[in-house]
Length: 399
Image (cartoon, rainbow, N blue to C red):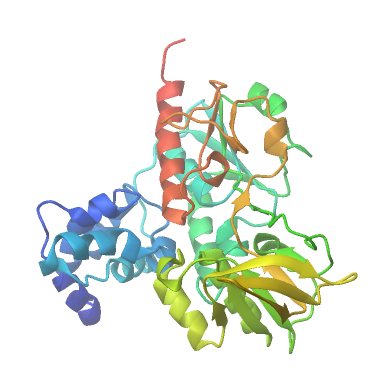
């Protein structure tokens, strides 16, 4: 049945011959083509087009920074195509996939085995495209759930958990094996996996919060945003004051999460508001919910005996103190220390890869945050997809 509201959104697309929206999409989704099928009420064909390049449509449609990617490219390059709600259209098709259980071509399993380390966006996408092409895939995940940062990095008010669960279940049901509670460097090793599998993909992310490197950082009640969202420590929120240091999407996610638990939240960002990297609609949402902001402000020191009591801030030439009970660091992240121990080349704290996702070990591929790829879900998914094709190429080379 035709959805009139969705049709109205789709009709705004004028199908630019140059496809600037597709150029702006990290996954290279053929956006004009799938929107054309929506206009024609061919929803399953729209899904077929999207699923040829992506597997996370219900997720990317909701959380991607569309104004900085597909929608932003569309509006900037073709004024006639301005305001096409590409994210909403993608989420609509993705949700129909989950509801109607549409399928896509999957080749019979062959005798080549691939291990995927990490069940986040990169790992899930890599596993899917390998399985679609007939490969025997096993995902090793350190948690007892799949999704990675989709689950513990993005609050459920932005991305409902049932959406993630349905997507991951659809991926598993392609015939992918999953081994939960398996952590690289603890109960699995690359040495052992290399003996058992024909190729390995590392998509373990980069979820260790960076340090501020200031006095007082070792005090109690100083947390990294990534760890706070993932580990959910038992701490007090109601009527407490939290300072969140940072201006990206993680800072907005943690600030809004804490605010919803009854705390006063003050975001401290060292540059003007105009250059904050967070998605604009998330900044607006945070402000509506009562999150406070201090722009062009640096944190100099954290004060307290055992626990945080206040922080010293500098705004231009003025230095002053701000009382707070907790301080949350949201200034970026890096991979787990296990990466340092891996016998493959590094690029700083990240795994070094070439343009096709290959590491210095011919049997091992990597992608996503652990390899320093751009830190969005769509870019991680692209890295996983591209690595899958590189693995296929590697496994089909006569040795």
